[in-house]
Image (cartoon, rainbow, N blue to C red; front, side):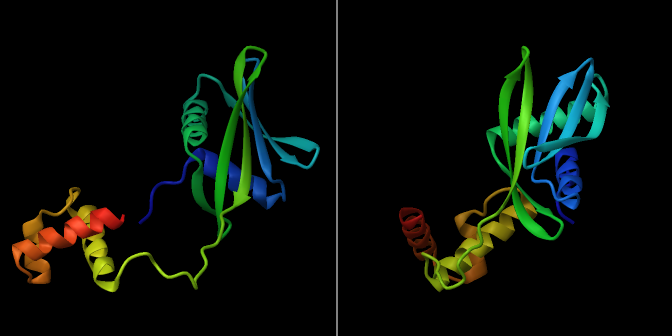
Length: 161
């Protein structure tokens, strides 16, 4: 089970289904108007009452995406949603561009050894399950190594990362 899909992601999925590649969001007459843009043409796809819960959720999604672009799977493809905030008659307006995420090169080797990869995988999964990083004793028990070697391994991993 992944993270819940945001209203912004739902709107972007709808926009892609009509072959548009951007969204404009503006507040007009106590409504949030959402338009899809394809080239120079724009057409409305949604309206939300400004005081409604959908409008508040959409604003939260947009401000969060303006701080950090959102990676989302839209119509089976990994996409990046970038938000630009601009002034429209004294109110914030938003331009959302939907771009393809760059594909990783499968031929590039990771910058760590196989043993470091095992440690990193353990730390990652332990943190997901327990919501905290493992102690050195957890690593010692899992990998059946001595305390000094765990300590040395974690020092080396942090120096290369």
